[in-house]
Length: 152
Image (cartoon, rainbow, N blue to C red):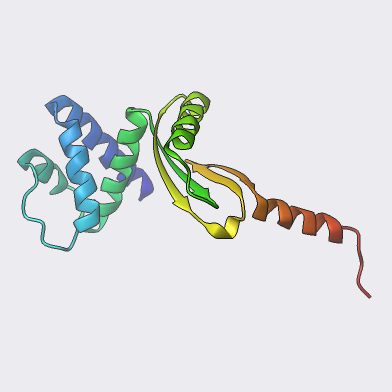
């Protein structure tokens, strides 16, 4: 089933490129995955006609996959950053620049504050997780302290 969903999504990408409407298809796909079942009434006719050939239960998975492959096509990487304290604009810009250099892609970065981290950053970029938080370091210290200790 996953192969069929991937195939529909890839075909939609090619169809959108061929029609010169890939950006519009992407925008409406994004709206649709967040509004399916809410009675959205207007989507472009070309996108609507394409989606009519997709089985109804597969429309949302196809649109999610389509969004993913569009971002891959445009070399856009979604990055989630968790910080113990708010980052300044200068810190965010420096981090974004570093991530662009590291991954060689445009970065769409979302920063969230999580005081439970105590300090440092946890960065999730695609399937890559970089965790340099105090919370993680304390957990590792705890494990190493108990390593080799046997309780009777």
